[in-house]
Length: 396
Ligand SMILES: [Zn+2]
Image (cartoon, rainbow, N blue to C red; front, side, top):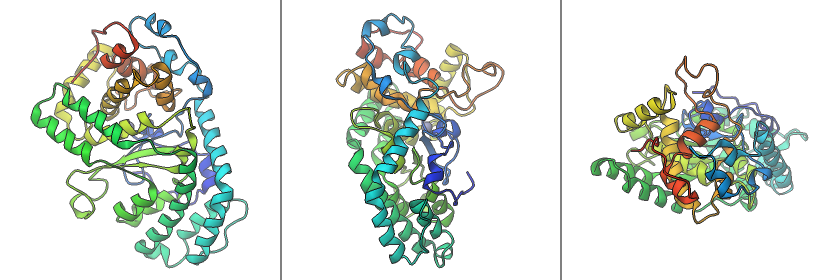
């Protein structure tokens, strides 16, 4: 769990260097590198310290070049122009997006400030200041229900503007593809049924609905103030959200939350959320929920690639997400589709490949590890790209 940080406004968020995607590294997910926990302890991914790609990352790479890589898809095939500054480029897009929506959002925020009787925000950081004021203006600090209503209203204003620039992809397509991959896997029929059930139950929500329908405590609510404009997505599990005590949840239902800042960091025709949504959805069925099922997979990866993780949830989430993306890659532009999907993990370091790689157990794979050892050996992907079969692929 991460301590709430209520006092970072939107502008401060713009400078953020945290995230679970950071999470992936930071939490566990963020997909990217996941990291650490979100406010609710959920598993998330965001750009944060991790990053994404840029236009240059979308430059076509001939399939013959990828095929010549031999063993597997190389990191440079997917992240050729991402490099260590890909996160900066993604952050620049998010900031430009925030700036672009100010004219639309500020009048809405102003109306909400009056409606909820909040103090006049600072001119220089109007949106962030308005949000922060909820945390210290009575009765909100002492009344979670009223604070939820106010914060959800602000979140809805941000979401509406962000969605005009970067609509959410069709989540039903992502879930259907993942369910098809589960049904085609080698796990038992009984386990397949439960995996499918959990994926079907997973809901994609924006923060306003997350706040209104799924948050039950102030401890979960307050940290969202500084996350609304951040470049992150996460999977809030059943347990994260209170389990059976939460009347809105089916048993073991997870919720995937995408924040407006992540929408703004994407671009039409450029990077997109397919991999992020697939990865977050797969956290609904990761190794934290089904440790025995993933034991052979983690043992195979440990033996073949010489890397072990204290928590295999990230490789497990990538496993299914890569299957989804690989299934779609053949009909969606091959390598170009991969570059747009995986931008968010290019330039992320993790611990793999570091001097500590063979002397310590790690939590988070690097972008290179994820692309070369997990994605690059995926048989569906290799088939889609015309690469030869890879005997060292680890499969369920
Ligand atoms: Zn993750």
